[in-house]
Length: 399
Image (cartoon, rainbow, N blue to C red; front, top):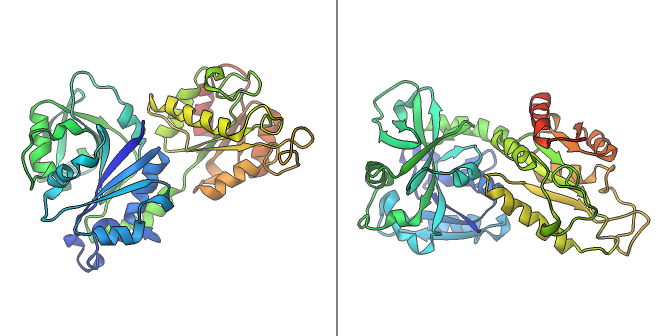
């Protein structure tokens, strides 16, 4: 399953005045990069491979900055609109590019939660849209949302102040929701969502997590302070064989991979708390000629497909193919990536914005603990039972 996301990225940012300098809001630079990069990075981290940008009249601006997305590790599709079609109309124009189900984000807000939980969340009864909701101290600016069970009953007026739930601008949508809605211009907020709510076809899911939009100069200033800090996260470094799956010796095929009790749940708990999750594993079977790197990487892709079904994911896999004395060239060598050396962990820290002081390594061997110590993070030894039982220790002992 290829995960697709759509970003409403054509807003002109008139309330920001000179701060946008004629650019759309998502291209305003924050913390050294355009705001939309924070969204794209979050999507890519959750496994989204294709992103459709609804760019209004700013196709050239986005193409100049982002190209076709290859440099970002994604496929990028730019969909302009002329004349202006409003948010719902832009979605209609993009319909030929849309997957049967897709994630949609407002281009001027950032909500840091486990996106895949929204994707995988079950619904009782029929639905067309699933919205991420956020509780805020004062819903007056956004308009409070009334939730009845798992269904949204009403979108309130912005004049009603006080604590409440708001639409946080992240949607999991069915393409069929666009059937028979009319012709552009159409507003998502005023035309489409009220229609679906009236049909009892909109599910609401409440999440915590950091949230900000950049609709005002004050919030743009706050975003410049907060977003770079939010990007730095604790990481859970997980050994693979013996921690996530039964160690049957040189496991390299899905049919031989047996998840251990609580392993999937442990990964999801880290995801839900906003942690990065890495697998760091010695794979000397490559050096010994038992299998190749391609088979290891295919197995790791399969693991994430398995996890997607429950709304979880592993951010990245790091493996060492070497052995110091056994096997074939060029893999027979002493390296700095084979545990107990810390090379795999240090490489992950170079590749990702890891909050080192709050991170942990969970492994079942002394070499895992040695690698953790050498990398400057806490090690937790897994011996038996459910790995999920160690998550609380990791979260509360390292957070």
